[in-house]
Amino acid sequence: MQYNTDHINHLIRNRRSVFPDQFETGKLVPDEVVREILINATWAPTHGHTEPWRFPVITGEGLKKLATFQSELYKQEAGAAFSEKKYLKLQQQPLKASHIIAIGMKRTANSRIPEVEEMAAVACAVQNIYLTVTAYGLGGYWTTGGITYMDRAKSFFGLDAADRLMGFFYLGYVAVPSGKGKRMDISAKTSWIR
Image (tube, rainbow, N blue to C red; front, side, top):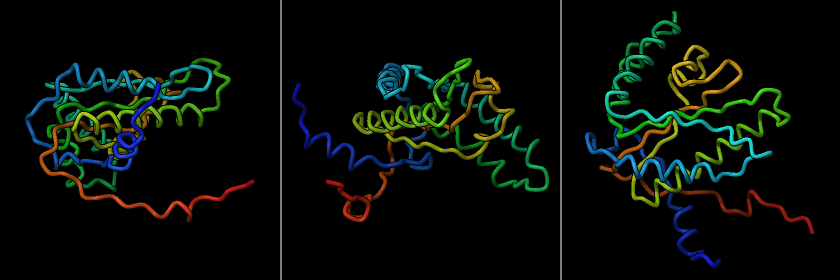
């Protein structure tokens, strides 16, 4: 099958992170579209066909539950580093999104696949999410802030101790587009061995 490589190149080179403050608050992405985005995510490469990704989807009243859970967990865990500004952000940011997709990596018992390869597979799945979101004309943002690396957060998303919470993908309609991107010339990052 032949694909239009100009369209693919354009899609990849014009993918941008769109942050929650840039979303059109209150406008919901249809669940069917989110489902298609997630189906595309699952077509990422996965060594041994383990498909380690897990995608709890938070929307509607679930956004308020997430906001409460993550702000309170942060408050409990922050200790002397507690910041009222961060606490409030954790309460408010989820409410700006249509959907939030938690990004989990599930380890299978006695897996022979190195953990780093499972994490890479999940990251590839997130790139598929980004590209599909862009193709639909939506905005999205992968964040690893907040409670991502707190072990006590895992159970809220159905993850076990051996699993990893790898962040959150915020999804919404774009009210304020992101600027043009830039990358270094490929020759600065490439060498050819012939």
